[in-house]
Length: 265
Ligand code: LIP
Image (tube, rainbow, N blue to C red):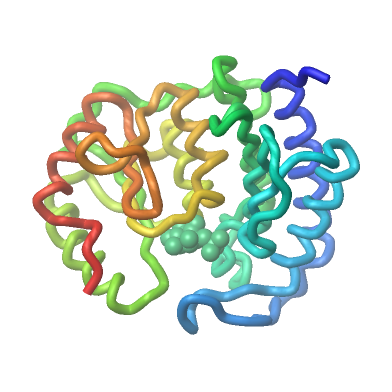
């Protein structure tokens, strides 16, 4: 069978919508923290796990031989096609009922992301992208803002969970904040990248997000015209991810380099 990026997107979107419906139906008024991960603020709820189980089951029904990398279940299987799953990106928002959390699913073929869907469930917004086919919010084709200079740029960012890293991030932020229009900390990297694609922010940088946080949103942003990458020509990674339209990308990059944003305390 030869699947195209659009076929993968169709399946990914169907699954992300189903997981979103399940989460909305089952989210209690006050979800309970089940476990903590890297620090006491890095939480997992029962519904993170239930969402990933549902997503994995649906992928396996249609594509039993594909590999899956999920935030909660880790890496399983091997193959040319790999699904990158964040069952709830923005778990702290989910916990508090802040309406900015997302189900994020990306599909990689031969190591390259070809399809991505970010379902921002509480807002009913489903962002999609297929490689070479553009980024979409419903029927609307997305273009990120371009030609915005750094001093007029609204920049999204996020913070890690470990206190030492946060102390460094606050230092970096102290240098960035006086140089830009303002900062937003939305609480979901996937949602931040979609906001960038839709022109709701101009740029994004963050140290720490994992591949499942940005695999789908990164494709949405780049298909909307943004550039994504790390420091000094490196690809984006958990070390540092920068995203913005060309021009602003370089300005933001050059502002960050001397601040050494990849260091930890
Ligand atoms: C979270 C992000 C958030 C980021 C955190 C974390 P989770 O993902 O999307 O924006 O700042 O470091 O990675 O844990 O809610 O899936």
